[in-house]
Length: 104
Image 1 (cartoon, rainbow, N blue to C red):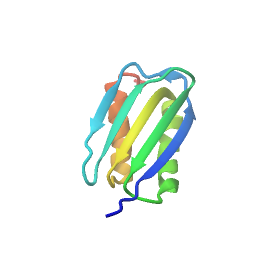
Image 2 (tube, one colour):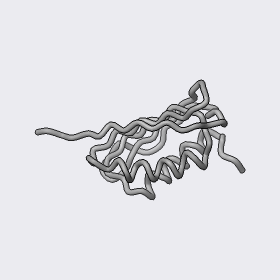
Image 3 (tube, rainbow, N blue to C red):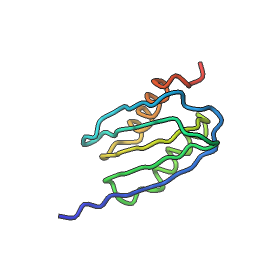
C-alpha cells in the first residue's frame, strides 16, 4: 500500500515572537494537529504534512491569510488528516490563543 503525503513549506515575515510552545488538535481523520514553538529570527516557518495530496493552492490561501494577519514569529508544524479549511483556521487560532500572543 502506498500513501502519498504532501510536504509543504511556507515562510512568513513576522514581528511578534510566540511566547511558548503549544499543541492543539489531534492526528485523526477529518482533523489536524498544530504544533507551534518559539523561533528566533524574523520569520514564521510553517511545515505542513498532509495526506490530502495536491492541495498546495488551498493551503497557500488559508495560511497566507492567517499568518499575514497574525504577524507572529514561530516554527509551526501542521499534521493534516483531511481537515476542512474552517478546522484549519480554528486550530491555528486555538494555538495562538493558548500561547498568549494574540492581540486583544
